[in-house]
Image 1 (cartoon, rainbow, N blue to C red):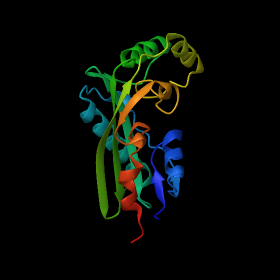
Image 2: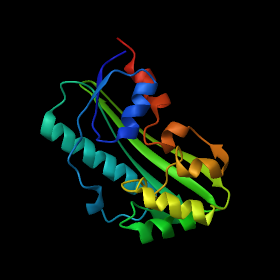
Image 3: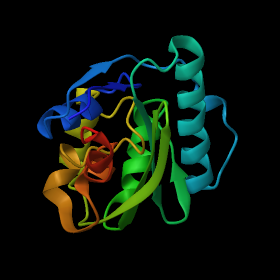
Image 4: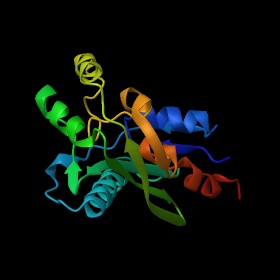
Length: 185
């Protein structure tokens, strides 16, 4: 399997690549997705990923294949961005409680002679969140830096009624769709 660069500082994305046995080095790109003023979730996540890839290639070049990604959370026709503070996180999570949440991840894989772009979505149907457990979760600060303040592998896991799609997509990188491109030539 080819060694790649994970153009992201995300611990979760690194753990995903590790769990699938993908050899990689991690080197984050310096693109501020918060500078984007786009409300359409699929347009936003694509533009953010493209910005990260362009920033990475400009800064480091393309000596190894690179994968960059971005993730957004939507619920009730709202784009749920990263929470700015605990009150914002509480409101974002209450929007998701007892509802259908769609998590979109865009991934761009770029090598010298190949570019692959994927936009994947995973839907979660959640039960109502326990208010006390929600408040305890907010005290941990684990929600910080997470799209939609959502951690389907953490707090939200106990409330999942149904999953439609790849769970890796919801965690920030659809590794199942990336793997065929990493096979040795």
